[in-house]
Image (cartoon, rainbow, N blue to C red):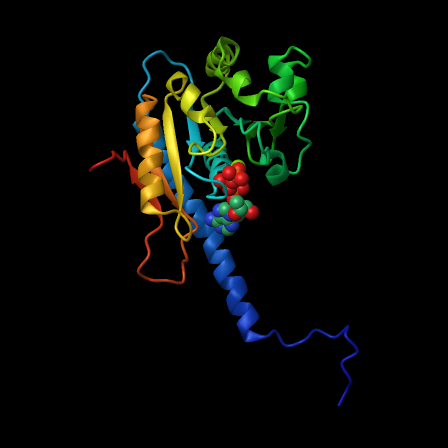
Length: 244
Ligand SMILES: Nc1ncnc2c1ncn2[C@@H]1O[C@H](COP(=O)(O)OP(=O)(O)OP(=O)(O)O)[C@@H](O)[C@H]1O
Ligand SMILES: [Mg+2]
C-alpha cells in the first residue's frame, strides 16, 4: 500500500465535512436574517424630506455584538446596488470597527470633526460590499464631549444629504452615555441582545435608558443564536416596544 507522504489527498473526515456544511449554512442564514432586519429597519423609519435614514446600533453591555451587527447591516444595505451606505465608528472609547474591516483606525471621524482631514481622507469605500466606512479616528481625550455637541449633529445632517443610510456603531449604553446623548439626532436605535449573554433585566434597563433619552427604538436584534438548537428563533423583533 502506498504511504501517505502528506501530499496525497486524504479522505475527508465526515465530522469536519459536516462542520463546514453547517458553517456555510450559517453564513447564508445570517445573511438572510440581516436582510430581514434591514427590511424591517427600513420600514420602521419614515422620512418625508428625502434625506438619508440614520440609525444607531447599540446594546446595554460590552461584547453583545453591536459592531458585528452594524457591519452585517451595512453589508445588507450595501447589497442593494443603488443604496449609498456609510457606517460610522462612533465607539471612540474602545474602537473596533476598523478591525472587522481590516482598515486603519485613522484618519476617521474625530479627524474630520476637528478639521484635520477631509471627508475622502477619513473614510474608505468598500467597493466589494458597496458601503463606506468611517472609522473612529485619532483617539481624543474627551470622547463623550466630542459626540454630544452641535458639531457632530450638523455632521450627521450633512451625511443625511449625501447618503441613503447612515449606520452608527456605538459603545454600550449602560456603561457609556454617548448613544443616549445623540439618539434624538438620529431616526432611531436598533438594540442588540446576545442570546447566550444578555439578561432580561439588562435588556429592560437598556430600553428604559434609551426611552428616557427620548430615543425612538426601532427594534431588537437577537444575536448569536445557536442554530443547532431547534427551539431557538433568531431574528429581529420588528418595531419592538417596551411592555408589549
Ligand atoms: N453572531 C455572532 N457570531 C459569532 N461571533 C460573534 C457574533 N456576534 C459577535 N461575535 C463576536 O463576539 C465578539 C464581540 O462582538 P462585537 O465586537 O460585535 O461586540 P460589541 O457589542 O461591539 O462589543 P463592544 O461593546 O466591546 O464594542 C467579537 O469577537 C465578535 O466577532
Ligand atoms: Mg463594538
